[in-house]
Image (cartoon, rainbow, N blue to C red; front, side):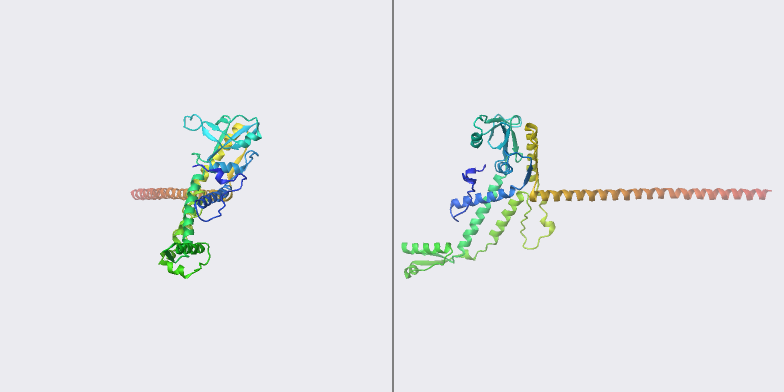
Length: 362
């Protein structure tokens, strides 16, 4: 699923996700769009670029990559531009697209003589990917935004229903309209006012159990989906079902699952910029930024520490092994010296006995 930019931005470039009413299908769509936009604002800080020309703004590049899944770099009259278009053409041996078709009215107005709108990938244009499958982040963002919106609408309805202790049953049109007006006032946060005795006579109240329900489950669901969404983007926001203190080890259980997607995104951006440099001579670089960069640095420091500790342990083991071997060699040499001394003593005793026998014979 690809994003609808007409729904994401107005013709003046102003976001269209502002929520004015808290009911109806349009409210739901606006709330989903608004949540996606807020998360895209966060992930805009995921990467830092250096050396990009004016025709490749960092924010536009990231918007294309994260929402569409890819973007094309083309050359128009010696100027490099980032744009998006349709991938097509006869697939190559890996069933990948070979053509990039561009229809950009803004570029056309800026360069009236620009007539080339079909480019051959890796020959006269470069495709920078967000990931190996050209997916981008928008499909997952749309999923999480939908789940959060559904839960928040339920929370809103639950909050309104808490104001109603009884269900009202009307026996005539007058009672129905009065009850409807009364409930509308309650929904608007006003105090309901009974205007006539006829209202009381024509309305029957039935106990409503909704007011007794708790919101704990809805709050937990909200925290769960928020945590899952942030985890998906590589940020540590653990959701814990325990209603007690969380140990540091428990808080770090999912650290290994946070960075693989971010590493994948960084890899394809680096590959894309490398291809752009080989084709167009543009020397640009990309690196992780903000919280993602800090986490990567922390992981690197942790890995370096682990390697240093492993090397230290290995050196200590080698030293202990060498000392053990030296002790073993010393232990092996000690009995040999004892045997030599015994042989010397025996030979001396033999010589003394021989001398004594000689004297006796004389």
